[in-house]
Length: 146
Image (cartoon, rainbow, N blue to C red; front, side, top):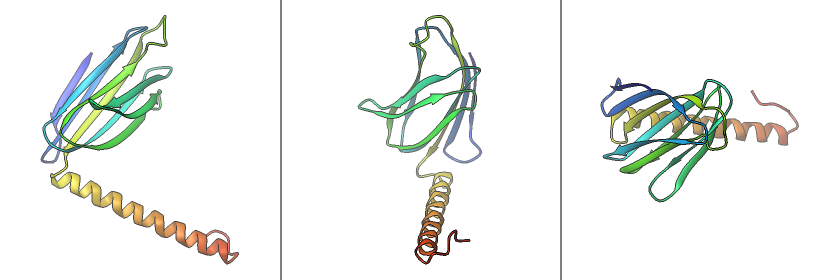
């Protein structure tokens, strides 16, 4: 496995990238210990075929995905504690799966996390405005709104 770990470009950010092989019929877990509330961004891509993976806390599965060569990704706001990302190759009896895993943690109190939340809120507002304009245009028989 190849591993790269570095501090992010902003205060409170940690990034990690790993290339690994998950043996046939096996699973591989990566545990991340969060010392404070954080935003966890993750991405998994495979060299070939698909590979299911989950993101879980001590008490619940938080997300389920299926990675492929084109990748699968997600973003979660989490409280302090441990989070486990598990790549599950148990369905394959013959072949190992090769995957690249990228993790990025940004402390919720950091400037970077605040900027990300503001950008997400702005995108949500814009999407809501577009939906209202589209609904109005459809009600008036005008078709697509611009």
